[in-house]
View (cartoon, rainbow, N blue to C red):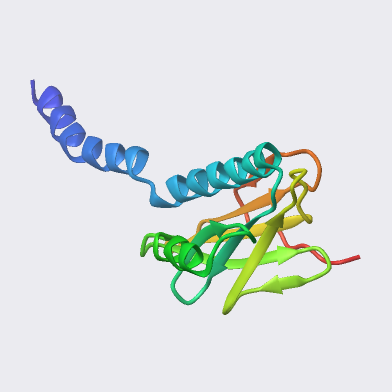
Amino acid sequence: MVVIVLIGLMLTLAVPRLRESLLTDTLKSTVRKMVGTIKYLRNEAVRERRPYVLHFDFESGSFWADYPDMTEEERTEAKKQAFSFPKEVLLMDVWSKGEGKRADGETQILFSERGYVKQSAIHIGSEDGRKYTLVLSPFLGRVQVLEEYVEFEDS
């Protein structure tokens, strides 16, 4: 009987933490949001036959998308509706082949009307030290998600 009470007590303490970490991992949900946005923009670029631009703002910790034919008002509205990273999640840097790594100000990734993109990597981390690298393939139309910080160099 004492063993059952102890097991019950341990489960009472452990299950809420386990549930919280499984259901509300802000880093993983942010990574999923980024991957979904990248795939969506690539598909829209091909479908609409127009380039799309994914913008990153390191100061505000946000990202948004627009396209070159937008009016200035539409661009301002798109930026106002930017996705802001949760406070526990950090946009570390964005690397693009030929342009190198950016970790301040604003940077962008362009999706051509054919869905092509420069080889790029987006590094996202959390307060607890976990890091993800999202690798954008130029022609394959997929995003590789690595559960570590992977450094890239121009060659």
